Amino acid sequence: MKIKANGNEVQIEREMTIFELLDVLNVSMKEYVTVQINGQIIPRSDYDKVTVKENDEIEFLYFMGGGLL
Amino acid sequence: MKLTDRQLERYSRHIILNEVGAKGQQKLLESKVLIIGTGGLGAPVAMYLAAAGVGTIGLVDFDAVELSNLQRQIIHFTNDVGKPKVISAKEKINQMNPDVEVVTYREMVNSSNIVDIIKDKDYDFIIDGTDNFPAKFLINDACVMLKKPFSHAGIIRFDGQTMTYVPGKGPCFRCIFQSPPPPDAVPTCRQAGVLGVMGGIIGTIQATEALKYLLGIGELLTGYILIYNALEMVFRKVKINKRESCEICGENPTINELIDYEQNQCDLKEKASN
Image 1 (cartoon, chains in turn red, cyan):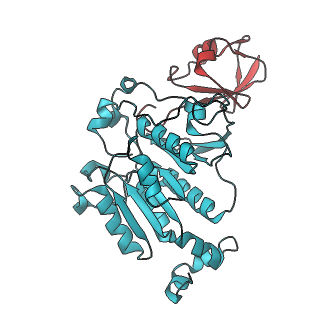
Image 2 (cartoon, chains in turn yellow, purple; image 1 turned 90 degrees about the vertical axis):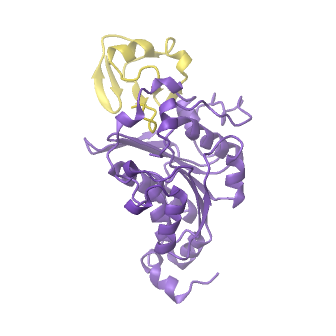
Image 3 (cartoon, chains in turn purple, blue; image 1 turned 90 degrees about the horizontal axis):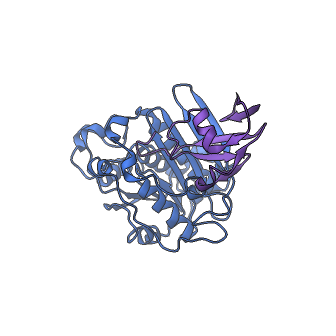
């Protein structure tokens, strides 16, 4: 299925939790990334509950400014 | 306050703009901006706001100028090494524009001084030009509590990002980032590095936001975060909504006092601002 990640179209096999998606897409700094889905910021504690669905628009937002990235 | 002949000439390229005019220029001369951090971001912000005739500029920085700062912190010169950054910056601003009153605070912001500093001149707009997350969260929380608009920014390597918080009008920094990363998450900040121009690009955007806010013109980066990568030369403006569960600006805030988060050891060693 098709999703959008940081503005780019990405194919993933199936619906999955944010937690799984971070792994599948090999997102850097997994522990500290903020995830926004369709304009909604997801609290970190919900990463294992919220599922990513077809056509979702996902933004990975990073801490910047202290040498983290 | 009426503009003098010299001011009419100095600011003529502003005054000719319909969106600014003599009235807008007078507004700028009566405005007060606090710049926290006089480093990679704060340096260009201070220089452009001073040149633009922002009447009062507050500078907060505890550090002294180091040789390794000069690659990006363009308000400081070679013979300033060893001098407190706020003094070095004040000297340049005074030379650049005598219309500007510079107020210096040679301090590190913390939960016990930040409110007094912001209230000292009742600053209209605050610039976060700091390089560490404890300070960034502190500035955010203090501005939310005091209902002050501010510009957040961060730069590292070839990346930068910035957003503008306006009370009651959009998300705050904590809406996005919730809480600082643990202090040991960063192995070495000296090793991360930053291309010198990053502070110029992102800092100049912060200065632009401050001027627009003070003049009441245009659309601010409120409800957006602007993310820039210099290698790909791509800007992305990402829409961000308020997080209702935000601990400071949400519906049921759980933070009612300012927090001093633990500083990274390497941040303490390399205290220099971005």
